[in-house]
Amino acid sequence: MESQQSPLNLLTAARPPSRLTTMLRLIVAIYVLGTVILSVEQFLKLPSNLSLVDFWSLLFLPICWWYLIRIRQPVRFPYVLGMWFILLGSFIGTFFSFDPLASIVFIAKEVYLYIWFVTLTAVFASLESSLLRRVLLVWTMVVVLHGVMLVAEFVSPTFMGS
Image 1 (cartoon, rainbow, N blue to C red):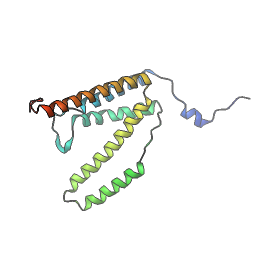
Image 2 (cartoon, one colour):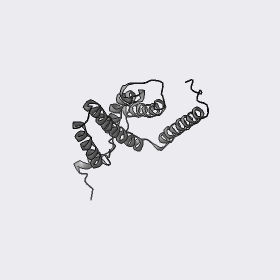
Image 3 (cartoon, one colour):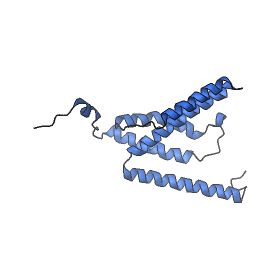
Image 4 (cartoon, one colour):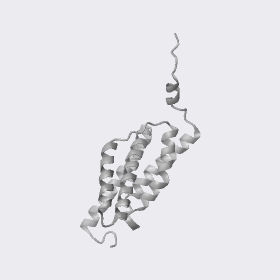
């Protein structure tokens, strides 16, 4: 007896890799590597504590979501109930704030960070193990380099020329 596939199984079956998917995977890997490299930059001061990596992420987050949809990667939203409570408290605090505009900017940052973490987690879960190892190796090297720079600044405050 042949097993019949339900329409639900056909919808959730993975697509075969295409050239577009391969190109999207490369762009997503470049985004992840660029994120860690740009996250340690401190030479550009922007308003509202923004940095270059925030603009980099806003540019590439839609591409990451397109990639995740294209490969049909399930995306989980952990702690969404806790996030709603935080946002509810922030909205209530906005009404009693001396600077409501600053509170709204803070709320937007909370939402952005939650979406960023969810996206990054889903992207990491979707990468092949060899590519993930390379990405994590670069992340580790950048973190160690940043730690060395912090220690060097602590030992010699003129290390970075300031």
